[in-house]
Image 1 (spheres, one colour):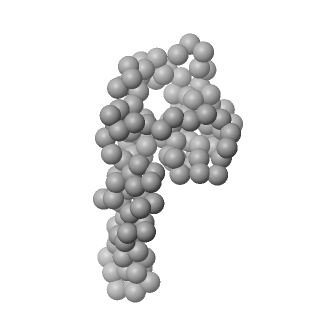
Image 2 (image 1 turned 120 degrees about the horizontal axis):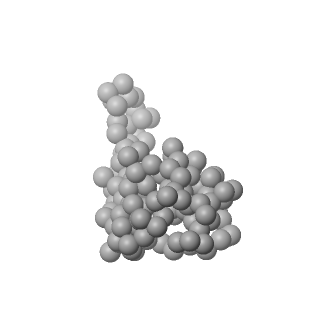
Length: 124
């Protein structure tokens, strides 16, 4: 990847999309070429902001591109990586809070499952 000066992704230890980006780079045999040019961001939002202003290549969540018509994109094919898990947790402090429980129930429902699947994720 000599023509790419900077690339970006989320830190694989902190974000599922970062770990998936590493899987894809390895599956394509590009990790060694990209690694020295790779900037790890703290979050997917931070990574996207860095990518659109500084990087020539970036790995972002499809949801970050929903309202963007610029640039080119390639959706990571499932054969290059495992599923990206999206999880939610109800904390003990919210266990008795009805609106919080209703929101968690909504997240487990069919509407949200359809949205999550549309972006290539799996419900945890």
